[in-house]
Length: 297
Length: 131
Image 1: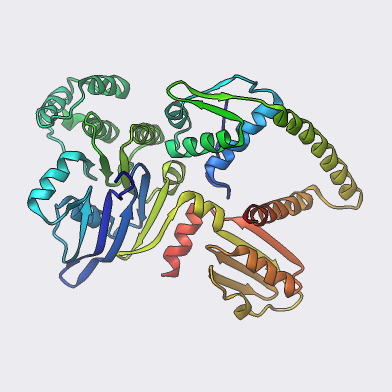
Image 2: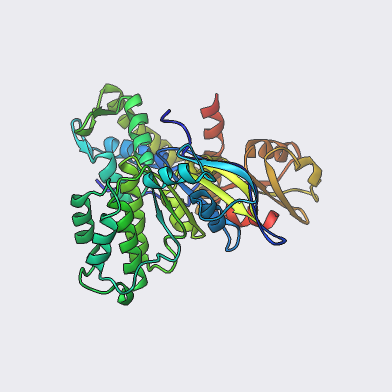
């Protein structure tokens, strides 16, 4: 029961007129993990998140969040009680002060933790009596995070939480995500900032043009993605390297560069067989995995 | 203890942490009975997923280098094997130093030696681990 995924989708799709925002998405997000949902602007991340929360109705397919059907109004309400959501625009009432906003949110939730609220307010250095409308983007994000973390949700969903934050703000956000995860909350957040994802995420899903391209643990990505640069005595035959795991091959004269998602040992072996004069194997950062995968499509 | 994890190398963060803890024990920075920060504390300090720390700690517990006590954290336990490891690391360093000297004498540049080491380390290790 505890290993049951927190989010599952089956063939989830959304079209706006003729435009396909999300196409047949099969997603499975594990419990007690930090999962990053990566993709370019317009890849379909926000649409997917809104469908999960029941804010947008899917054109086709189905899904569950914490075991509740996303398109069922009654189940959706039960699910929302156990899920905290930080929206991209962090919509808050501008005419309220920080303290009023917190009191307002507190009145809605039975799982609100006063002690946690006080601690977060202190840590975040938010000005309690300032009107929300005059807060900086960083402060608005801190306030939105406070509202989400003062509860004890089973699942925290954030849509581009780091958008527009300075490095200090990003550090604060990431630290919040790690402490949240340490409390046993499953975290699902969308982003196109590779550097931050690379540090905190356990698992990564890359979305491109509404399709899931990569669905892997970060450890697995680090261990298996490699770039192999080789030099041969004569122009090497490309077809020899079209083996499982090889995603891209580039040749220039006697040189060849292979981008592999796995099986790099076999590439090296083949290069030896073809009497390569130089073989260099280098790890591939998440940034390159992202760029190569997106470019491929 | 100071740990520094680099997300852009090809090594999983939990392996990096394991290695740094082992290194700290080998150099004596961590001694028998030393206490390591709790999973949550270290995760927040390094700003990495708590699962990363948990995995490193539990693997090290499996190796017998750490003892995890419910609620009170992780403690280093240095057995004879670890002491023996410390010695073998010293021996290995001396051998590597000799080898590098020889390669330099043969006219190889440090950069070339480094690349050769890195290329060899990146692969055989993975193959060995699989066996």
